[in-house]
Image (cartoon, rainbow over all chains, first blue to last red; front, top):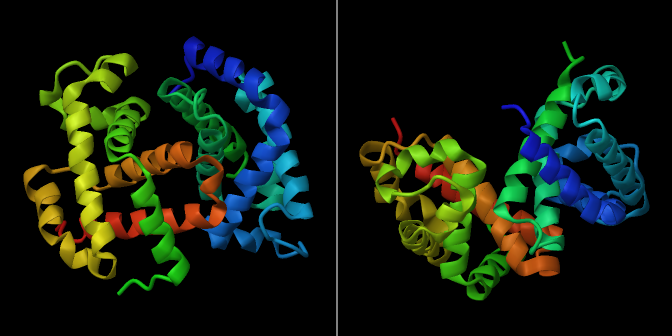
Amino acid sequence: MNLTAKDKDTVRTFWAKISTNAEDIGTDALSRLLVVYPQTKTYFSHWKDLSPGSAPVKKHGATVMAGVADAVAKIDDLRAGLLSLSELHAFTLRVDPANFKVLSHNILVVLATSFPNDFTPEVHVAMDKFLSAVALALSEKYR
Amino acid sequence: MVKWSDFERAAIQDIFSKINYDVVGCAALSRCLIVYPWTQRYFGSFGNLYNAAAITSNPKVAAHGKVIMAGLEKAVKNMDDIKTTYKDLSVLHSEKLQVDPDNFNLLADCLTIVVAGQMGAAFTPEVHGAFQKFLAVVVASLRKQYH
């Protein structure tokens, strides 16, 4: 399931609209991840506060969305572009890749709540494909 | 038996009292057919599903959206025994319609996104969690009679 030229255009255009809200999107998506999928809290046992919108959640939400922004910029070659991020996730963080799908879903939910008029079905499918491609690129170095 | 907290029970009843069934059913099914096009395999008799515009304006999609919402309403009214409530529906999907049950999760995700879009900020992480738990029980109940 490859990103078509149309998918990439849709993603870039939509991202341009929403990128100023990236940090809030990240905070909200991560907050939801920890509440709706409590098993994900196991990756953050070193944080003092796992509640929605807490300081570590905000900081990390911003980090995650910076990665997504990077992926948008490198959308023409995600495998190469996200290589070092893949190494980080594979060797250091060792996040089970199933969680990429779950976080992607939460990002889409936040996009729906925050941009109900812009997050049309066409944008939805392009973003879903894009986030799946990002997840795949992040899984590259796992084994 | 599924245990529902007071918050979860209230949240589910609240969501279903607020959402517009006609809009949500059609929008969720449309999104499913657009975002996961392989799901169109079950709707060969629906006519024009060639592109997003055709799908969202297709009257059979809208009508079927209502059927889905009516089914969900049964679960909302019988939250303490969705499994039994859905026994016949499960047999229908498995034996007559022959739907791959993995598709239920795809439609559930689209429902979550459409309801999120309708409710905006009111769809807090906690409400979101309750809704997904409800849909997970619905999906599990629909899977129950598959052999």
